[in-house]
Image 1: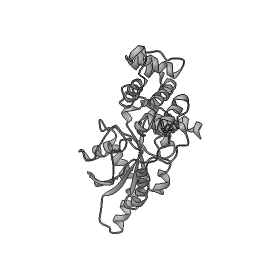
Image 2 (image 1 turned 60 degrees about the horizontal axis):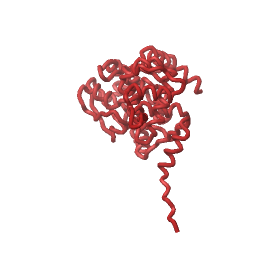
Image 3 (image 1 turned 90 degrees about the vertical axis):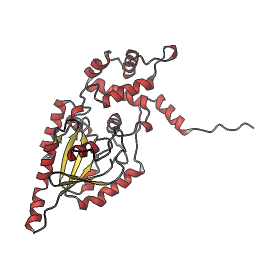
Image 4 (image 1 turned 30 degrees about the horizontal axis):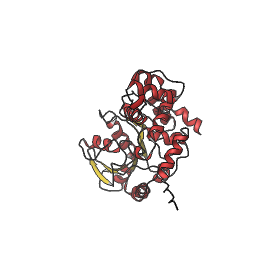
Length: 309
């Protein structure tokens, strides 16, 4: 009697993805993120202000819809981080959008420090009434306590390092570098509580999930990297085709796959028998986007929100 071959579920899932490249379901909520959500709720009473970090390239997609529920009406300042990677005109659209909704959004470039002083001032402005009230009650002046929140890989550690003027928090171009709670003292009588990045249990909109995956807020290791790159090429062909043309010196194909293959041939991603190495192409395109080599790119604009709503 022949033994039944053991079924490898991971292989089946991968085959299903390849067979249906138009479908890419992303759902990631590891246990440590559930703990982080509980940690946020637990420590809110310790802080005066919440600083919410968003990725300037995907401000809508990088906003955790649970944050506003969790912070329970605490004063909040929004930071459009990684401003150096976003299209300047679209970045202005986002700042105007938040201004129209009575939310002050500060664009920050942690590489140069641009926007850091503005962020500090906004933190002081947002807590001014509370701190003055404490003084009137005879309380001793204390640091303004701030909690930084945001999805993984949005640049929290880099922001903290800029605010302190020294390398006080571990940084890395991958989600999950900031592991636990830590208090960080700042100049200007400010004190920061840093927390790990937090995602949400289920992505209702596939476009949101993909944007997070494009920017590596979701780990590449749990994704089909080839399909992800194909989706990114499809997205960029719509929002900024000139960036692909300029960077890779190729024509935009009739399909995303054709464009991907054009890039592969141009970059010499060829294996035996003149076949293309799609994994290598995928890594090249995604990494060059994340490193800003494709150019300043914004993947969504405020008008996209109206379409989604």
